[in-house]
Length: 471
Ligand code: SAH
Ligand code: SF4
Ligand code: F3S
Image 1 (cartoon, rainbow, N blue to C red):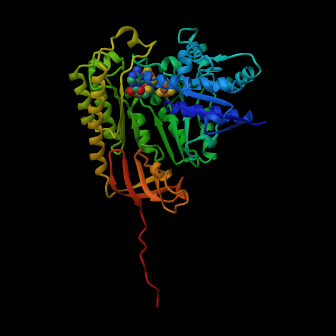
Image 2: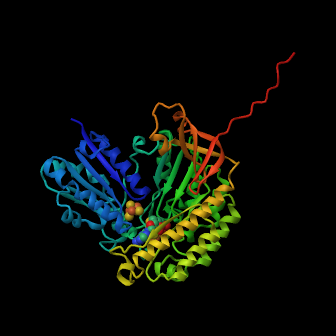
Image 3: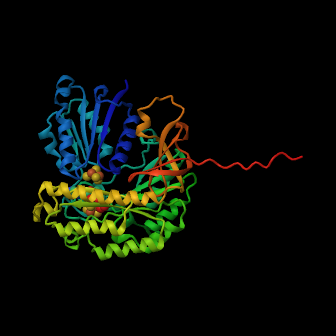
């Protein structure tokens, strides 16, 4: 008998990819995917720990399952992802009806755990080792993920796929849980990455996005020497069928001239660089232990402008980090104005248990001040994004069409013309009136109008020059 699974995914692209892997694995074990928890035999929650709010939302969603489980004890409830690794037993304590807790490095264990749960062996937990629970190599192995299983049906679109090239993080920014939840930084072998990229291309992926917490720090030492990010991009570029290669997230200190020149010289590689600055103040960056100053960041930024002038650069900022004064905050405003990022993701600082900041620094910026700074920074970024987008009016951009836009989804499913959405190679979102069959095509779109987040255009029609009939 087939069983059904419902999966809810929050957090970053790593989690989206992990959910795809888990579903591919479960399908091999006879499961089919359903869209609502009510229809599912197995309910999986793929969680994120980056901020307290993300965790509290998950606990509140889990809380609502108490009654479901009381009425249907045969249903299995599993919590996976970063919160599973971070909270472990706490999840069973706060939500005693949960049957499985699985860290992101243990996802391969899910089918076995399910067998145990359904055969009455009680609740199951599989988590990776803590950073200090053993030798570095043993800890690292316990965080390795099971990447080769790919399932195109679980992707947001069949022609776009994520590919993990790096596991974990060793930067230990003082605010961040990721080095604990995802373990030590490890570059996967280039052979494994290239063969997985080939599988993706054969499955119809036109665009792959390489994932790593500090993706440009990628390094792998093998029998033939060391491969860095530039070397890896060169190898991936040769794969037939792939049209675009993107990568996130970059670490400012590792944005070398060699890497930028490689991006410039390889036409399939996207010149979109997400390189979070986090703050515009040296004092704050030091307390965050980011490992660079604003002078270093600007030097990197100028290197990008010189080598890759067509690049679009985006950033993340944390507002209200411990000890951030108004003056510090204004330096973040100034940095956005100097760099004119394509866009920035702005986060209000939230204390995370187990981090250096939680142990050593005081979360002293009031909630209202964090919220006000968040709004101010967003307004500055939105104004700049809009101004820079306006410069693109009248231009023609190449768009990989992803599918109907959110607006189109609500309209008549049989309508011949719907609003379609896609992205440029620089990651700019473009909407235009088209038809559903255009999904997966690369199309030229002429830009007529813009907002701060979107370019609005129309399909560029090729001018047909009539030569007239001879004679
Ligand atoms: N590895 C990436 C980002 C990972 S987390 C990098 O280093 O850039 C994504 C973003 O969440 C971070 O860039 C940061 O801006 C934000 N973030 C991380 N921890 C946070 C915390 N404790 N409070 C608020 N924002 C946080
Ligand atoms: Fe977290 Fe810093 Fe690592 Fe990014 S680089 S995942 S912010 S510790
Ligand atoms: Fe969240 Fe883990 Fe990603 S904490 S942002 S899901 S790496």
